[in-house]
Every structure is written in structure tokens, then in C-alpha cells.
Image 1 (cartoon, rainbow, N blue to C red):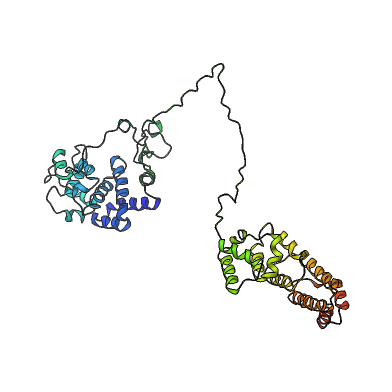
Image 2: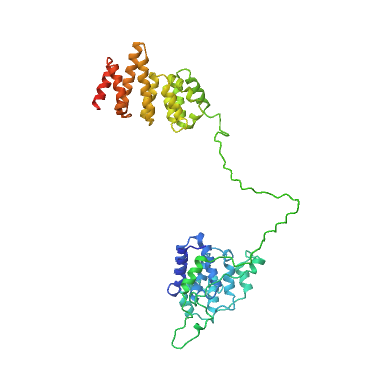
Length: 432
């Protein structure tokens, strides 16, 4: 109930009875312990007081003073330890100075309680005069201080028969048997009895004491197993460790992103107006997982690229960690080359890291597409787009030009009549 530090503080207060006044010790107790800790600290002191030989006489007086003064602002009957104080004041076997001290704490003698607290515990014992003191009966003290708030304690059969917790004897060194012949008095040899460390024992009790005694255990034996009769079916318990596979699509909310799904369906057929494009981009930014519920498949990607390239770029960025991203890239690299497809690839290269094989394949397909067009006007237009696209990749160091140097150089020579192709060729020469 008390930590190591609190136990040390409490022991230091108990040892102050030789020099410090009771009032100073109580004041220091109030400054060290919070009010919420009073009960635990006083319970520990009550536990030590119960064992008569654990504390010295001055320590016992300090313990009684702390227990009483901790609740001095309340009625005596509200003190949870009032019964223990009454028992100590009416114990005929106790020392007279101890009984008189507790009675003065309770205010029974009618004397000045303040003067009592201004003495040290050692001075009180040294100057104690028995003549002016009278000791009342237990019943009288219980009627005056306990009132009706402390009925008879509950009697428990198990608790009444429990064995008190083992308390080490502070006068016997650790590991020694006090009944051994080595402790017999011998001339010229100091007795080992009384050489134990009392403070060490008290500190150990404070840090490890328990409110419970060593009571008898309630034994609950396991019921015996009934014998198996002839003809009776045996219950089998096979060792089957099946691994559960979670279906992530189970109970999924299919209504999520209904608006985005409808807009994507429209985006596959026609270009969306700016307001609709902005709505799709905002929804995907707020919830990136909506991309898995928008209804876009790899086969539908070319339609989205041609009609709404900006949305296609955003969707592919959100799908970059998807297991199916390679299928989307395969479809993108093999679709018919156009301005929009190059725009999508160019934006992807500046946003995410694309596989090198994908870029090389896409460039080869672009070159092949330029070479396969028969219409001279469309061919020149497409060559210009490819040259600008390749210059952007090279200048941004997105591709290693040496990997495709021969193929791109041949492309530039073939279409050297076009200004953009000549510019790309000069760029290649500067990188050699």
C-alpha cells in the first residue's frame, strides 16, 4: 500500500521522537502526505502498533499522535482508527505513560492538548508523572468517542481462524535461530541478542505489509472424471488449427462514393465540366479508398484517359499501391498513342516513380506509332509531340538517355526535317 519512498518518510518521522516535538512531526507528516494518502499511512502505523515489539516507546507515541492528528479536524467518531485509540487507552497491559498519552490526545483528561504536542516523545516519557492521571473503563471511552458510527466488527469464520502474518524479530540478526545455544550469555563476549537492525525491519514491514492474515484456503478439488461405459460414444477433441482468412469485401458499404461512381461513369463517355472534375478530385483527396469503389477497371482506362486525362492521372496516383497497378500500366502503355495519353504519362513521371520498363516500352511504342502513320500532316504533328515529350523526360532526368540512345537517335535522324526532332538530336549530342 505504501511505496519505498513513502515508507522511508514514515520511518524517518517515527525516529524523530527523540528530538523533535510531536507538533513538528505531525506538521511534517501533513506536508509530506496528501490527504488522500492519510488512510494508507495510518493503516501502516496501526499495523506496526499492533506488534508491540516492533516499535520503540517513542515511536509508538509518535504513531498514536499521527493517527489522531490526521483526523483531528473531524469528530472523533469519524476517525476510522478511533477504535484502535480507545483500545490503546484502555489496555491494562500497556505502559501507563502510553495510555495517558492517548487519553490526552483524545482530550479525555480535559488538559491542554497543545502543551502535549509541544513536547518531544522522549521528554514526555522522561517527565511522566502518574499521580494526576486516572484511567477510565473501555465502555466509557467507547460511549464517549465511538458513538453509533462504529458497530461491532464483522465476524468471519475464515478470518477469525487465520494466522497472523509473520513478523521478523528485530532483536535477532537475519538468518539466526534465537533458541540456538550460541546466544547463551558467555563471559567477555557481546551478546548477539539485540544486535538486529530495528529500522530495517520496520522499513521492510512498511513497504510489504498486507491487511490480510494467512487464512485457510477454500479448497475446491476438481470433480473426478466418470468412467467410460461399454458402448458409450467417446467425445473426440481433434487438434485442428485452421487459419482464418478475412474477406475484406464482406459487409463493405456499397453506397460509399455513389456520386463519384456516377461521375466516373460519365467521365468514360464524355469530358466532364470543370465543376464535376473538381468534385471528383476533392472526393478522392478526402478519401483515397474511394478509388477502389468508383467502378474503374483496367479495360476502361483508355476511355478515361482520352476523355478526362486529369482524372485519369489522379486515379492512377491513388492506385499506385494497389496489386492491380501493373495491369493499369500495361493497358496504358499499349493503348493508342495520343496527346492525352502522353499528357497522362508525363504527369505521372513528375508525381510518382514509374517502372523503367514501362517508360522504355511506352517510348518505343510512340516511335513505332510515328513511323506507322501514312498521313504526312498527322505524322509531323505526332512527331513534334513525341519530341517535346522526350525532351521533358531527359531534362527532368526521369529516364537514362543512354538506355535508349540508339533508338532515339535513329528516330531523330529519320525525322530530321522537323524542327523539334533536330532540337532533340542536338540535346542528345550534348549528353554524349
